[in-house]
Image (cartoon, rainbow, N blue to C red; front, side, top):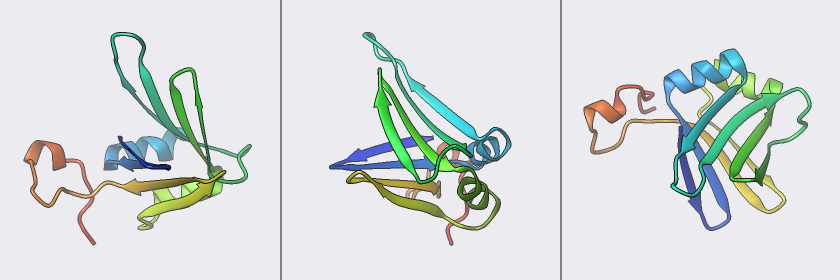
Amino acid sequence: MKLRLRHNSIRLRLTRSEVDQFQRSGRVQETVEFPQAPLVFSLKSSSDVQTVSASFVDGHLSVAVPLEQGRAWANTEEVGIEAVFQGLSILIEKDWPCLHPSAAEDADTFARP
């Protein structure tokens, strides 16, 4: 899963296998190991969540989507989920190959529409 932060926005991009994992378990997580402390970021779906939301607590960035919205995204050709949560723009997308591809990096991406 790729994480992009820019201005007041969060963008998560998931490969095919990550979307499959999200579909099966309702959760995908990555960790970046810094010497001082790890940065953890995750995407989860839950029936307890009513709207797309995000939180950042103790080095963990968590993005949550309503269960049915997450299922619909993972199980269809829908490319992304876009929302604004308390002024924060959130975009969750299926990952596409780079325009200047590296075979290893693009092996698990979706075909461009």
